[in-house]
Image 1 (cartoon, rainbow, N blue to C red):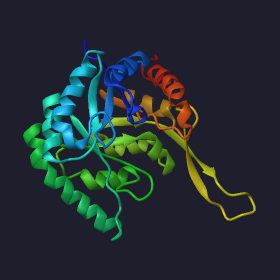
Image 2 (spheres, helix red, strand yellow):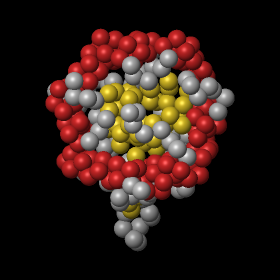
Image 3 (cartoon, rainbow, N blue to C red):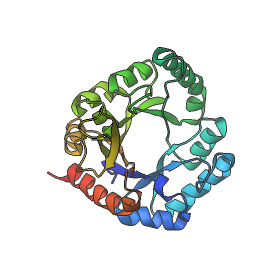
Image 4 (cartoon, one colour):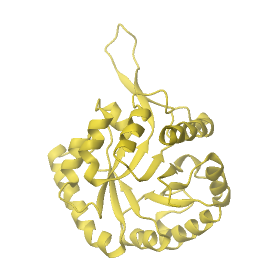
Length: 264
């Protein structure tokens, strides 16, 4: 029977873990799949993606783990590797460059348009993620403006609960805005922490925390997704300020996430 939800984890924190051990590790935690970073220094690097990514997928499959998405380059070799390995989504983010937001948005739209032939040829989707700060876009409305003219079968949206909350957006509103192009949901959490003392000019930083603790209500996200009958990937990104606590925190967070989506 097909699962309602596929729980995935971004394996960025475990770049030195052997593949067999990685598959067993994430399976034991309770995940169905991973998002893999195709980057220098990881188990598969951009230079060997055509051979390395399908091999990685086969090795992980022996532990019952799929690759739901990758974060990596968008050259044709990567599309070929994803198609061969059965990986449906490449996650990207679009930065605001020196010439400003609108010019960067225009460039990002052109870049996405240039990828459409590869998306169609290999049946691999580009998923654009929201991100706080100097990105196109930090909020759902801006992200939808970027992609709304594209076919959602080829250019979709990866909606991130933490970045949504850091920007002060209500989760139900954000998800409603992007719904037509939604292809994946990221769950992580964070809050703003003051860096300077109370008598000094205020400076703030982000503290990446566990699912129950931050500005993003995972419960509200889960309730909305269930209400709209969402079926798809929910990726926990395993991003925490306390790097030495990653294994403990991600184990707690997947239990929390599963309880929210499968509770009555």
